[in-house]
Image (cartoon, rainbow, N blue to C red; front, side, top):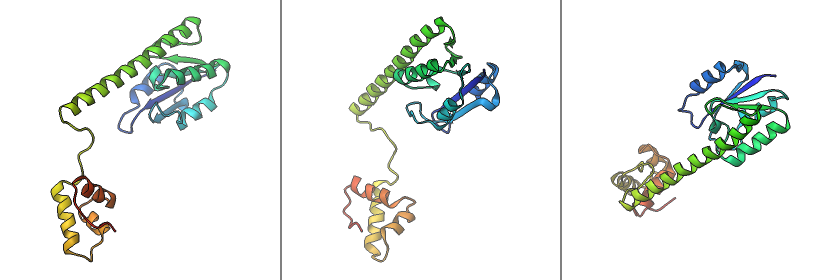
Length: 194
């Protein structure tokens, strides 16, 4: 009967330290803390899969926060159902959920629904913000790698030097050939494609 920890962040830039420290403080063995850099929306997480293979009857899966385990209520319920069927407990430190007790099971259901609601509200606010920005003429996304002037310069270079190939010109401007093609298309520059 062991406390098995799971820590997850969505991107490589984020740090797991705070979650791992909390799991250690809760009593998880450092050798049994599974760490992952992956989106919670991705059901195929290698470390989570390995963790589920490690869990045995009587163990308890411990996470720092409920949303570290799953991003949808349905997915969380599927995992909880699996844990319950195999007589494995679950603890979420932030929400003080402990499914080894009847009250903990009820609290889990409430927090899972609240976590889903929070994600849905964030998504709605994000979409509304993007729509408002578009209405004001702003576009989201990354800036183009080539300005119109640079794309024109690249097209002129090809025109003036027929021996150059598109790949060489793209390298001269520090971009991929596909980026060069997209720039010409974006700015309406007429170039013979190879």
